[in-house]
Image (cartoon, rainbow, N blue to C red):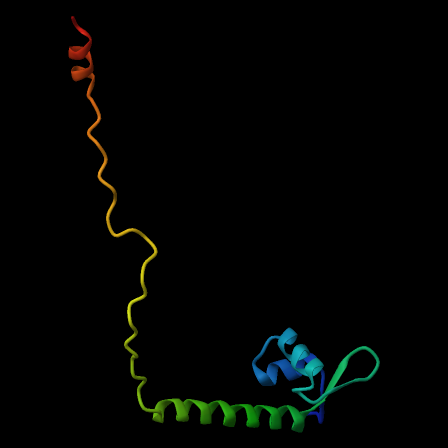
Length: 106
């Protein structure tokens, strides 16, 4: 049996190996050609396959370009000045309990 010329959302999602919500979002945005006849969406098989063909070509070209690009060079940046003090202030020694007791006895 030949494949039908028109597809519903379930069939389009199966061809694209995508979730039905993803296919609906693509159709609503106009990225994937389709139309609503009544309530359900209807897609032409050729449009779905053309969309997939273009998407595969575009993604493949991007991967090839990324693989062929020279490696990124790290930039050396000057250290930023910290707003924090570099050292804590020196505090006076506090008397201990034993020295306080010795100072009280007559």
